[in-house]
Image 1 (cartoon, rainbow, N blue to C red):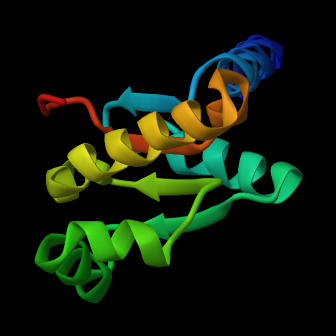
Image 2 (cartoon, one colour):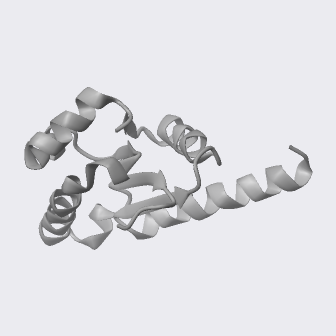
Length: 123
């Protein structure tokens, strides 16, 4: 991992941070083992996000069983890692973002959710 890698890593980090200031949901996708979780772990620590991974089977089962309740119990700002496993959450995330925009304005909704997932899935 030479200087080129570090420059690339800093560029990706700055793009994600910019996205958090402009959009309510930031999606980070890519092949497995390319550093998505590492990237969001840095953001988690620097920006006070909570981190949940759907690699945890109990967490995944809870999200699938009652998506609305799950989103209510895990408020933003939050990172959902491996979100392709819990597609049932997407309508609930959208509802929360829309309600936040309606009640508090578009700016208040920015940076609510960071979602990560492997490249081979449809969102």
